[in-house]
Image (cartoon, rainbow, N blue to C red):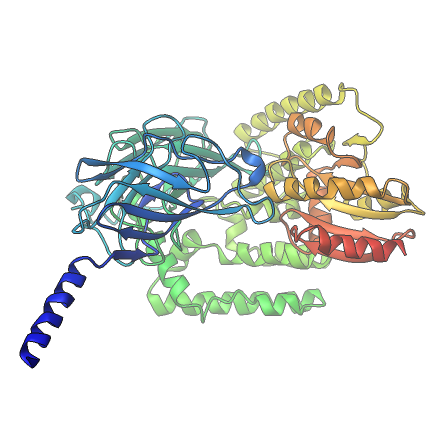
Length: 597
């Protein structure tokens, strides 16, 4: 009798195991265009496959849906969608207006229990949701074999390039391994456009169905181009590469789509062509630098506590000592390190952000020009974007050389684009001199065309361009003396800025009879035409500042860049409150009501 009971229990146990639900908690998504969609759980039932998902998407951006023809692909076999909850298939639904999130569930025909990886495909149309290489968390896919030419030990005579200016195009060839037609991952490509040094030029491309793409751009001189691979909503969802490029040159980038990028793995698995060896050395250097932070603190704590130029000089000396120790430790020459990561320039960039008044002092300028850091004066140095922060040091000087010429050029163009009229600086290089004239003429025409618009009384386009940056906030506040002022630093492309404006609108209507004014400031990062259209729907006073003015407010009032930022001033212009980011209406409403009491 006892043996029979035990046998029956074993049979029941085996039967139950065979029908137990197989579950993947928080599975990985390998490749997708849409990083705002996450899979929370996949449940493999006998009669269906249930996928619990989450979307984080602005409620005002048009909603989301999955089509009725959505299917799961497992090794070429299709399993159709059978239903959904929280929305109807094929019909758009919005996310929560406050959190921008929504949980939902998709139901599919049952998948084989032995399924190890699958894809969700909504369709082949533009904008379709496609999620590839979905698998249990922590499971890796087989890596591609990288061809030998992408792993070659490039010769030692692959030396650092000399500085040269040209308008010939750069070509970057992309080739993906383990690629499935339709994956079409997004690649963000950033480079520094010297005709508009106020911002990076950004292009967004998608690989073709054969996993290739030929990208062309202008870099004007040898420099890094940053390539970001946006493929997955998983933590650490991006890869990046900084290949060297130069006018007229080509480089080929190899990717492996079976690699989910995180802090350890990287989709970029090979490189060949122009400066490939040095580009890979930069990656090696950066990996070591991030792992070993002891020597590379950049003396930031010293900068924060610096009260005099002498304090900054001490901090600078500690940076130099740290860099030399790092180079010696890992066997890098000073020339290599200068190309890998320009520490001196990074130091000055931090100083300009955090100690602007000291940075602009004559005492500090005299020190810089006396010490002459190599990063300022080497004619073969590959310039980086941080030059934008230090180029004004050379304004008015007549120091000769490629880099001083370039600094004066950048400073002049930046000021022009920002809306400040200037005279042509000293530029000895013929190419840069001619380019400056061309850019100057184009900008004068653009600003003149914009100023022909009929502006409403509350819209101020560069009409304070002649006001010194340090006086801009005082000048604006003086116009509204006797009133409480809510200052909003925003941009037309900023989703949180737009969300804040929308949520603030009903409350502003409640305050229309109060002694309060809402002042909005932006600069050339907001395209003029888009700005003009936006301000029509946002009641308040709108100022389009020069970039120099906007930067001053960002550094001296907000103490950092980025948008949105908010500040409240009393009727006498005294600052009462400051806020970074949109934290919801209740947060700032409380402070406004305090100011109005």
